[in-house]
Length: 618
Image (cartoon, rainbow, N blue to C red):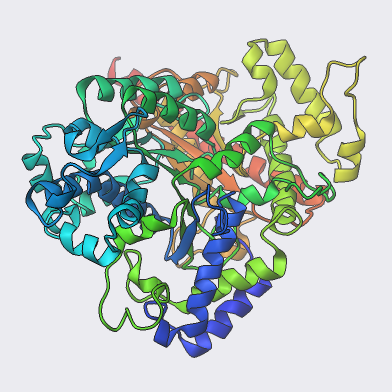
């Protein structure tokens, strides 16, 4: 996920670097602290959060810059933990502490919609108050009883999870089953890392099975949440992935939001966090309500199902996004955005020198990090401001990159025929593959070769066969269905024996792909990058994590089912600039030549092994 940086981003970083501001404190970063706040507001607006404090019916959102998605994810996990245990700390302060006078006076609404005396809530009800209800508690106590935030913080400090840890509260309230965090098994390693760091334990990060598209399987998730409800095991959060690192897949966030509503009606509530480190910027491809014309440049718009999930971002409680990925910003630049600003207070730590100035002045009070470069915030802000974090700005860049990505996906899908010594199988299936008709797949590939390969944007967009007399989609519609949802093309190779039959051994297929990627990547400081025609990266689909997803992929490669993990190749397309047909053809010719050479090596190795085995049995 590396590409050219935007000129405003480089200029912003250079300007900030010259003064070396530290956004941990306002006094050493008066301008870049303000800029960091503005970056957070820009993302809030992009994701559909409210940024207008005069809209009384909607919470005001807030965000801040981090060093990357890992820190943002871990911070969101910490906030979800603190939210989950906040009602328990308040209950202890009412039972044993300075808030005893609230014993028979303070009422709240349970997640099932019942209004009850807070003192009367069971432990299970306390663990499942809605996020909005919990975040409104300080303001509610101030409105009803005049309890200021400082007084409330002092009263809660001896009992809050930040002071006592989870173990003390769990023992006091008899919680035998620790809360869990749930996400698809393709989730980033930062979740298990974060669970270990904050003392929850990685065993309580529950990987949910994924479907054939590497998206979280909603029926499996619902079954697990029902089990949590039945056994009264609380859930910190459910994480939706918007743009998985390996496949560019997008989870059904809309479905997860609806699922939470159903479970809240039954008594189970949890945070929803969206890991949009890669996919967050693609929300700029959504046309706004201001009447922006669609398809006004040489690019592809989002698939309807992808657009639906990006529009659902406004319902998530928090969102991770990485400007140093699809924002074309220099490292380090991540961001965490909260739908409701009070969430930031659940992770606030301060020192006297950090607290000087206005109450909302220092960004360093909130978050995991201490010192951090103001230059990073300056870089993000200037790039957003100059280009525009909207459909006509970043949206235009990403639409054109999406066109290039789909064009490359078309090449991967049609690279080989039955006459070739190898097969190239994209992870994302062609539309016709779902029909199970080999003739339909062949016809679709032939159409891609005729109407898409070697064609410019203008030529592809004019090949419109859609209409009442033609059931076939237009060339542009077909192109949009190729590859992943978010510009990552994952594919795998397998090789044929000399008699034309396909290899069925996963280890042998992996060996071919490892040899190919070694020739198309920089794997040491001695490698001459000028001799590499283009770059590929690789990853591994483990049987344990990918389950039926990798089983289906092996089936499409005609590999035998085994416990062996599958090595796969991938390329991420970020360039918005037109390549020209000759560039892609040259790349594919070079790729084909490399694969053919490596297939021959695999054949020789296989034949040598076969001869050795045969001679041993003579």
